[in-house]
Length: 87
Image 1: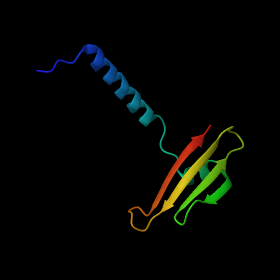
Image 2: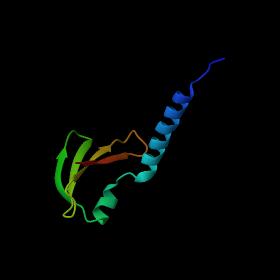
Image 3: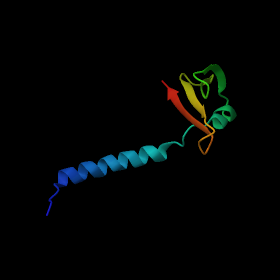
């Protein structure tokens, strides 16, 4: 029988609680949400044939948001977007 120390169990429980609270804290950013929230496109670059980067700014925030957009006809969904804050 394998015995697990209470310290290891407590550490694992604390880590799971942090991950769970971080996941619940904010929904993922979406381009539609950013535009509705007053964010403006401040930069755009086509990295390759099917990937682009869009940079957003907001007059009330001191950070930028960058979105990576992938268009791939072989995937479902065909449009994959990942947005993150640049602080």
